Image (cartoon, rainbow, N blue to C red; front, side, top):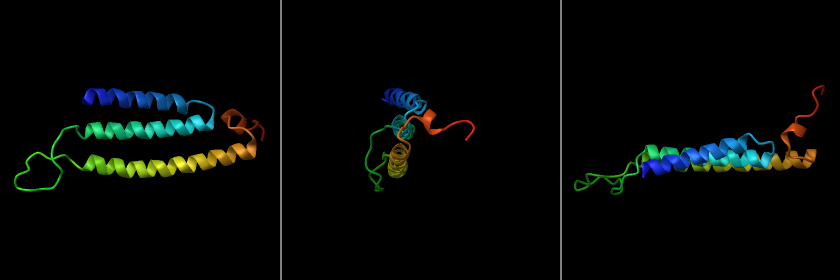
Length: 112
């Protein structure tokens, strides 16, 4: 199961890098979102996809799941949601002010 999720994380990373190298702002934002989701999946896979009981320590529970990867991912999801919303607002403002979302046209002339 870990192999399949690692391959899926790799596909998310590859798609994210492809979108980050594009010239449209919305594709760059989608690339950052995919990159964060790939990192979440990778962290979850590295934490181990084993089954077990909830991490409430009792005397009769010997095999429990580690809650640390889930806590890290939950924190990261909140942070990535905030960053994505900030990037969407900045891209919308830049596209409205300049009339384009193409990165080559947003850079302006060399002599400016």
